[in-house]
Image (tube, rainbow, N blue to C red):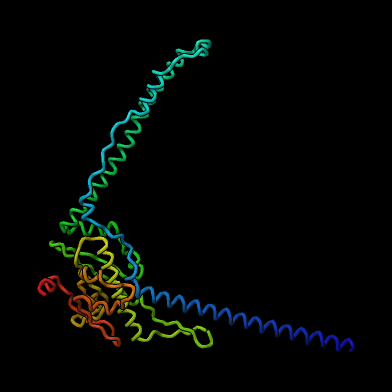
Length: 327
């Protein structure tokens, strides 16, 4: 082969190498795209699972207010002179040795032991003052808890609101797009209002994988959107009930979910009730929250909900405590 043939062979090898590198780069890019698509679909599915299973996770520790109200106050500390007594024992038991006499430091040694008694007395007082401060703090906390427990057990409306505000277990729900308000009437009847926002919570697009492994992004079908929204709203209602029953000594709670809908009376978009549920503690605590469908679970309680898969929620009248008492 002449030098020209050699050059052509080299050039052909270079073109084959370039094509092979390009082929490998395309395969790598395709694999990366498929991996990204799988990650996007997993994230989408996890999000959907999260907004429809809010009711399965309760932040609040169950409070026993009856037990809190009956707890005895902490014991007041007693003075102790242990350090002083030990220092006096050493002082009174001091016997000069031959070395003390030889060094002529007996008087100095006795004076040092006297000073140790004074220091020990001061130490005992400091320990007592520390214990007294700790006792006063514990007593103040005991008094505060006992007072709150008694107010809650007596159905003091402000006590309910104070407890909810101080412990505030609803931050995770608020991050998902639901605002909460609470009111208590003079009989201790608690009403919770959830402002849900479908446009902020339910995704408008649906992610899935094509047979090729690439990402498919489509507009969320209306029926699927509405079904997800119904489950989300009902899941929020159950979660609110779970938190309130953990925090408060109540046997029932009225929960109203609201959203911005067209008011046919005014022609304006206004916040209106879409689900209203009287959740009874005894019935609620009998539910297996991990296995229920949140929308179907509303059938366990007195509730108002008008929902169609094709059109979503419609406005309803809130349930009242008078309805429950008259039933």
